[in-house]
Image (cartoon, rainbow, N blue to C red):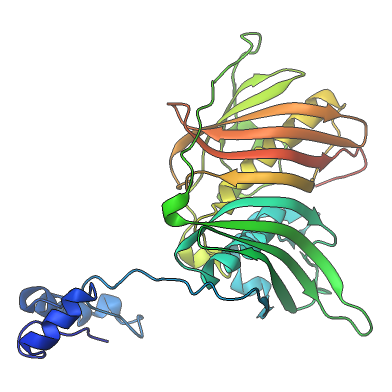
Length: 340
């Protein structure tokens, strides 16, 4: 699908109108090169390609508050990454991917806004692909507040039942205009000096963590005390074709899972080998997109730990201390009966 060319397809007057609207015309040399490129058999599996210059940036229509209900059919075979998140032989949708689903669906409605904060995340009934799961789900996005700089949603994932719906996940999502994202704060990297750094790869080999390679991001445990665990991490590249129906946009859900892995490791060490799964999160603020392949650090500060639950504050930051994500009130279960 070609945009307008600058060599005879448009008059001078129409060309001026395109330029005023911020639309760049296809130049003759570049357009011809792209045509030859598309005739290459390597691109035979691409049914449609849009070729043109720069298009105008999307502008969202704010309008009145609305409620959106979007249906989606989920199938295991359409989401290969789920085979890297298997518990007791069954693929389980990670809570972080469910949160990304809710948050990024909000973002798609308003393309010049970005996910900034996710609050009050709750897991009611997770989606487990055990052969008995439902295929049809509804994501409900209720707008609570809407203005030029910020839009706030209450988001829910549910499935319909014979009498009553089943609620799976819920969160409050705040979008901010891309031009109004606050500057990322700095974080001071601190370790106790009383811990000998250990290889993170061992965690995925000895059964401490059940995660497959797409979620295996811990390179080293740099510190582990009663008050914190500090990790150096690199999120492995996950091919778009493997991300299925949960492609990464502004929220790198695969990396987000790593901070919870740190909590799981801490619980095993200080709670006699007990295992953990995510329960709920008070808030997560996203200051910068987290790319695949970039070395980052995760500081998990323990705020509360009982025989049944652990709550922590998690910070993702780079070598300069720039914060990418800040999570407060991250809670996981503590259970000696849980097995992978």
